[in-house]
Image 1: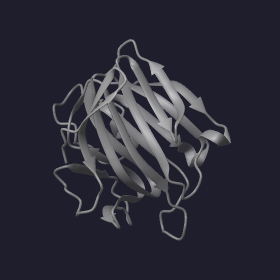
Image 2 (image 1 turned 180 degrees about the vertical axis):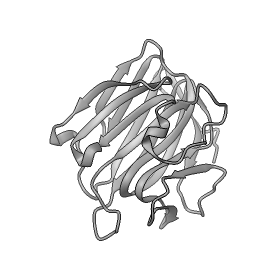
Image 3 (image 1 turned 90 degrees about the horizontal axis):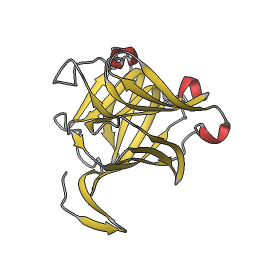
Image 4 (image 1 turned 135 degrees about the horizontal axis):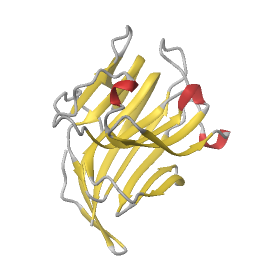
Length: 217
């Protein structure tokens, strides 16, 4: 869903260019799901939320190229209850993703290593069974540059907690913010100025809602 809503914030004008409340069936033209071929793995909408419920890796791409200065906001939680895939791990995200060798990005199978050739930013929050939170830049040649890492409890996941995630690119500054706390801020001398956004995870059950994307002018 697009919008022309404009908001003035200081010297920055914010234009809402996309939102989704996940109140309808999953639109496969708008959201492209790449799911590793494992049993008991599915992506679906239920109760106004997008669910990633998989035994292996999964990426759900927004099929809309983003350009320039943007802010992406959404809520997301890792469910730990009685589900077959429930595991406290991997609240992960790709953004500004492009494939240097192909015009079509959506050619992969959900296995993490299949994305190594992309150029993009990546945060793995609570990765490695909730032992690390890492920020990487994928260089497009197989190199995955580690920009920063946390291993302390404050930067890891809590079960069933709804996190407000904000991702922002403003000029050369790339930020990843959790519940108002700046986990990562990186001034990139070769900032990525266009690409695709994707929800990423592996072996877990996660619920996502209230996504908003703003163009910043």
